[in-house]
Length: 240
Ligand code: ADP
Ligand code: RBF
Ligand code: MG
Image (cartoon, rainbow, N blue to C red; front, side, top):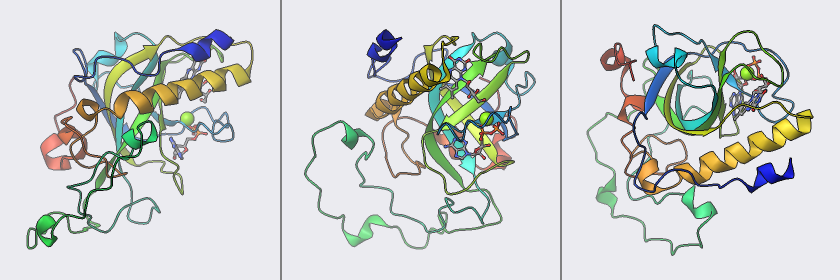
């Protein structure tokens, strides 16, 4: 089992996701198996496995995937960002975890925040999507021998409260590994923690980091617009 921890932490080329990715999926967060994954430190937000909404899901191989989740949290949620933030001129804070500290650039001139646009103004009437890196499993959880296929997402963020029923969108950007059975729960948890590390490090590269809308302020070159677009324009945008 120790050999499992030797997996490479960065998957796929630096240039960005490759076909058939990105794959899209969306729905409202539902209750899962209630196994107390939260107590293990690995809560998973479950989505319905719905072939009508995501036609690719029935044929995709079971396993662990990584990518981005966006959430439209209710106005009352502690992690909902209400203030508009100057999002430009920010470096990638997730990349900084592994990179030597870079010199902090001087703050941008006052013109950085456009005035009068109003698009970023908080409006609790409409969902405000925030993007988070995620790692997920699609399949039958062989350790638990589930009879039904599930899709469950561990969002790489420490939330201040649950978000059952919140609308969630997923952009799946790559495959990590097959699902496995394990000799113990500890071994399963250890492997999932490696998956989290793989997702974090693989997604921290500029061509894998969305241009805007990340909850932690990171900005890169990846086009994650679908994750944050208004509902009206995404009503039929659920195919791969
Ligand atoms: P369930 O069996 O109902 O899926 P879990 O123990 O897996 O229960 O907990 C999942 C719930 O925890 C999610 O639906 C969500 O509301 C909440 N949650 C809190 N933090 C996270 C996180 N980082 N990733 C996923 N879900 C989280
Ligand atoms: N369950 C398994 O039985 N085998 C696995 O290899 C496995 N890998 C997972 C990887 C990730 C990233 C996540 C989030 C979950 C994984 N699970 C796996 C599911 C895990 O058993 C499940 O989240 C808990 O049982 C709670 O439902
Ligand atoms: Mg769950």
